[in-house]
Image (cartoon, rainbow, N blue to C red; front, side):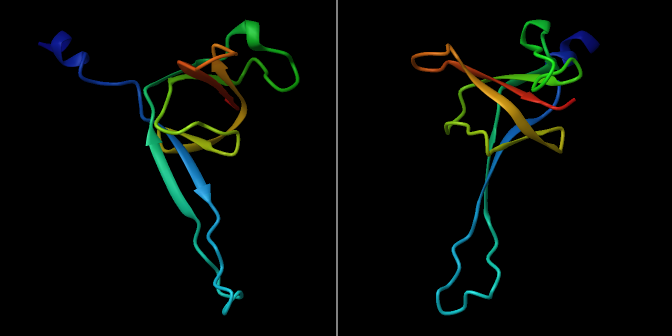
Length: 111
């Protein structure tokens, strides 16, 4: 019975988060405007960075590597990844394959 239940659980939740600054009202520019926040769930795998990506400056051995399927929007370096409720800024973002239509992405975050 326990073996059948294990297939129903995922490793954790990974979400792509994008904040877009709000537009101030020209009549009242001093009034703060809340940003617009959009999120997309990702079909992703999180693991320690593979040795072939370590360069010792931008990507180090303690970083995490997130491989995810193409989401509903094109990811950008200004987006953040939310992994199990913790926000992480991306250090690098690479499409797979490097040229042509991406079928997946690899992102690197501090570990």
